[in-house]
Image (cartoon, rainbow, N blue to C red; front, top):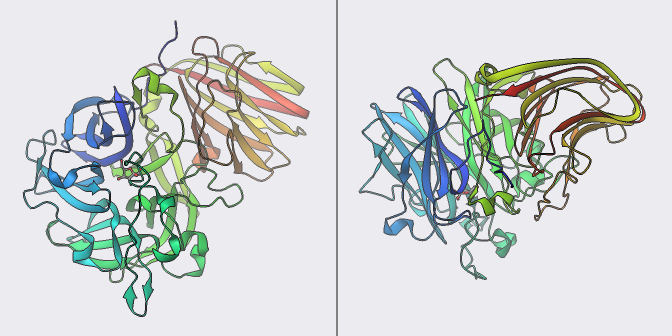
Length: 511
Ligand code: FRU
């Protein structure tokens, strides 16, 4: 009998559909993870907000629906993404009430400690044309709230119109080929970018959360952005802003960002930008732009700050425009293992949330496995709900690495490719094939140069693989769909030369 692909230590929707994390916040003694949710089918539909809470980032309790799309202004796309903020002890949610050509920001508030939410009678609170003629009415969404020096700010994804002869070029009428069935809330490819401006991020401010004024757009004609970033034919969805280790960070999820070398191989991407936000003009002077995760399944990342100061990031561990093999089990939508963020040497560092360590059991340690043109099973390392830490000396091998979820039939391969100077996540023989619009299909490459040693920390959870590389300098995340009972071995291999698995530590994760 086929078992379920339900994961043990990752947040999963119980039934129906789930996408973006929303309203991530520590409030009333717990971490809250709201999420885009369609409870009635395992596919995207009119959006509700589901609600998980956790005390350890590993066990997630399901609370009642936080938002249901019952108001006129939410028909027909529902309560789309947004964020949460605490004000006067109450928990406020700000979300996008989305209609096919109209996206407006709304408020709901909880006075019972963050369980039930009342929508504000004054909704929608913010409409694009009230604040700036340059923001398109149909693409203005995913408000992320934050407080700075007593002022509330909202960062949102938007399409900013071109200005010609001092006037914004009007929005075109879009002829839709069918009903809205996609999360991009209309198919962006319907729109001629030449007459419609480009994706950008916008900053708004308010003294009270209810009255908002436009500050400006973040991305502007700055050399560091390059054409692809500044002229995006899509929206920078689900932004976030925070300060950590003295650095200002903007996260966002651009739709349709073109691939650049081994970067941005997914059809939609997850970016972080380091630099400085000008709170007078909205401009973000960028120092560095990086891809958050170099794997397959990572989108719409959001953070929360814990009372101990940690900034924790959680993302949707899926990707749009792909098949979802769990749909036939009546659910679709999982989230990453929460990650602790820091900035070191001008780059984002992501580490698995430390709470996971309490759930390690059955430690197996293996040392000095040398392979020359061969593949060996690592005794004692098998399992499908495990953590595997490995140090690999790449020696002379052209390719070397680990095969997980493996048997003679299937394998998910994480390997170093000397010719490509890259770490590769290969899911071409993992099990059920995932189909999608991506041009590069079953492999993801991460440029790592020519290191002698590679340090990996892998988290496996039934159908999920997260690979933390070199102490969190990079992460590659992807779901794979193996045969649950039989594809459980861990193997080490070297091709065209010798490599050594100098250390391997395996733990079962028991929750
Ligand atoms: C991102 C997104 C958001 C939108 C939501 C709808 O994945 O497209 O921009 O608010 O999903 O579910």
